[in-house]
Image (tube, rainbow, N blue to C red; front, side, top):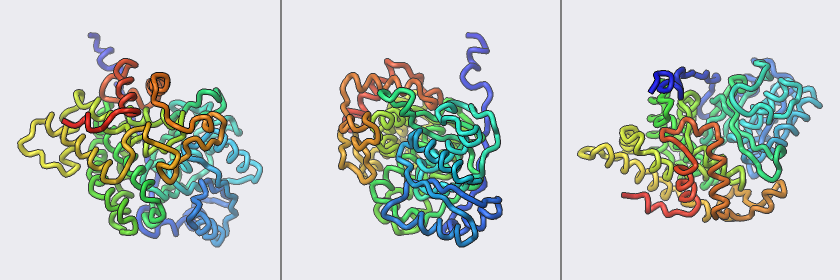
Length: 430
């Protein structure tokens, strides 16, 4: 084999910067003063509304108290859609805003990052910027991202994820845009804001963290600056997720998950992801299911798929998850990591396969609810051969797939997808 073939996958590895961050209880009270320091005058707040809480109202009123004008767009949906982004862009332009604040989880932050890129390009459609550094104007409006979940780490990363519903309405496509220009200006992570997260939503977001931590640790990028953060985030998630789920008003669990999600995002920001995320993107593109839930269901199957390419790394993760691996071989320890992940999934009460997800499975469920006819016509996850094929093809075109440690082809990935849809987790256990 030629040297250039050996170097072909990732000959040069790139470190992507993080934004400045404020982390800890009470940090959200600094939003007004920080916005003024950054020159904000008239701000568009982008959020899902966080209905059932008063978080958005309190933050908006605090911003107004500090002399800021505020316009609110509160229609961001989970798996944010292209029309969410473009509606916000229109509101921003019509009101002559000069800055953004996003409040919520990854959906709010991702939609806001996409809106900033669009605004910087005179309102061009956000779907034009799918891919790697597709924006041409490196300058866009300043952005404070305020997280209310311990999940995506979007407030930290150079990525944002959008569902394209307009290019082909009969075949929605969820894509990742990686763009250094999308990095937020300031990240605010306050665990006090997590207290209102429902139990099931907390669990699902926690598995998004475990995916963010584990995938860069085994990624074929093998990016040394990311490995320490990745492994430590695995450890923090294993230590704190159960408490955050079942005793959500205890600060230590919420704060532990805050740090886990922040550190995990720093790991994947340059260390890459894999097909846990690719499968998640595909399923939510077709069914609008929650990203964290999708990651949780896919993660054990993908770990089992990838182990032959990275037994040592999975053995390391077993230790990080609290497994006593003394006397085990690396293969046995890797198997123990998988067993620990399945135990964690079951301990926090997450559905184990996609065809078991129903319209009343969890509190943030949008299965079959619209907003487009495509989603209204998809009230249940089918799991038949046609479904498996379209999900597999979406996975193979996803931007996260090249980082997967084990080579991905239609023939190798399709059985993984089929098991995610229909398989029994006990089949994965040794």
